[in-house]
Image (cartoon, rainbow, N blue to C red; front, side, top):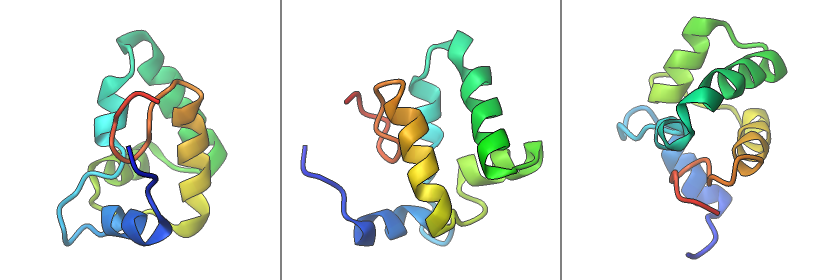
Length: 87
């Protein structure tokens, strides 16, 4: 699979396009790991529960400084954060 560039990632971040930034990746997690990933994202990015849901669904744009954190967390589980594909 070709590597995703920052320009392509910005497309994933726009709620106007209707893409879901990391919902696909989150749904690929085993059920017993979903809570752990959710809590890690919320702690590291200082998100509330509602902010997590908005960001996951793509209702709120993801900031540049949040991209690396999200990618690193999902890579730890062997999942590409923006496409949900296995690494």
